Image 1 (cartoon, rainbow, N blue to C red):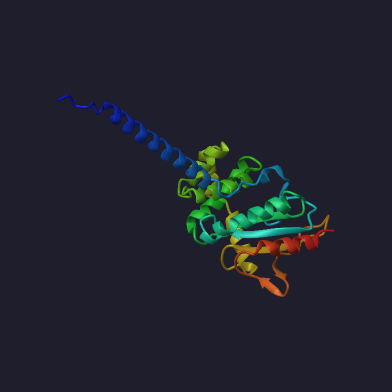
Image 2 (image 1 turned 135 degrees about the vertical axis):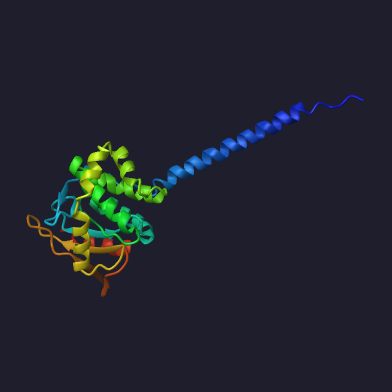
Length: 238
């Protein structure tokens, strides 16, 4: 009795399996890419940049009537959850010249790693202007994609085309992160994220930092809802 050949079905099965493997791989790659860019990068380096009198990093229109201050730790889960709100504010108000943004590294969940990160960002800026804000985006991307580790300095150097040895040497003595911590603690910040605001006078130094009060509520802990950020910023426009 002549047996029916099984080579054709086998080849079809192999082809199906190969297609499934390829599809799974493509989906995995897309997922990784998306997870690595959940921060929704804002082109902050394209905006005017400045430093506060104590060295705090500020970005945005120098004549903006308000400066929003965020105290955060890249490793802090609540900061990561709040980041889309900040990103929306950056797009709607900072990128449109209605507000400035001041970022203060305030280590909480990340501990020594986040203190080290603050030092790296300061030193990245020393090597090349604009790298602080580019690094701000990168650090959140590293955190979202599981790469916020002790190797973050090497990642930053590679992504910003920095001299890694010089970056490490500088980081060992960089102090802005300590200044940021003291600044936050002295103004009542006890955890992250925390948000404050400065009401500014054109042609003068930025106003004093204060917690946002809106409709009788003072937001002195945690992230402030976008609707509140928008309302107080809109009210300050002239």
